Image 1 (spheres, one colour):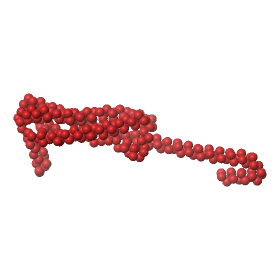
Image 2: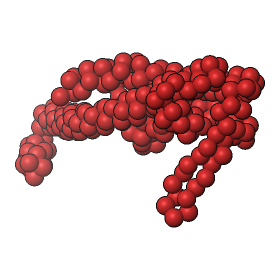
Image 3: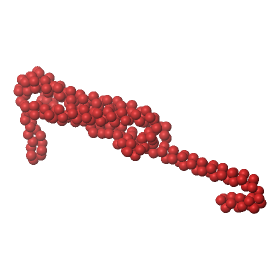
Length: 246
């Protein structure tokens, strides 16, 4: 094609047809420009197609991250509620100075679990990866992007608050162990314990402090609920985006 254009130009020059040559040269320049623009447009279309496919896959991964958060927060919430019920049961027993018949195992479970304060560790690894790779703009929905960032902030704040809350239980564990003795079998590492129920039941300060542990476990339940509520809303938004990207 280039050779053909060159021959045409040479022929026009040889024939001293300058005006036609200039018109032809201008036309050739326009054709070249059009070709460049078309090439750029094709490259842009191809980039958009690749970005759209990448965005689709990343949104699917975000859904997976959110579903994992939902699973972990649900387990943590359920455990927190169970521990709140057990601690309330212990406090009622201590206030009533007796353990109801057939409920000793439940009391033992409470003594075994009240200090095992825990909260799930999770995050949004796909969002973190997109941020580090400069691909956050592939979340085209700006409102969704804001909500994901807000969820990250909520998770980080929850981790800090619950960490401090759990530490407060550990800091007071020696006090709570005043009437409890633990024993570990070295052959199988099985934990067992005994407790002075009468001593616990006659100590009003001990009962009051023990009752306050539910506040810490309530924090676990509360923040898990808050995170789940946000996740449920965001999942709906991400699913809508995935439908648009198909």
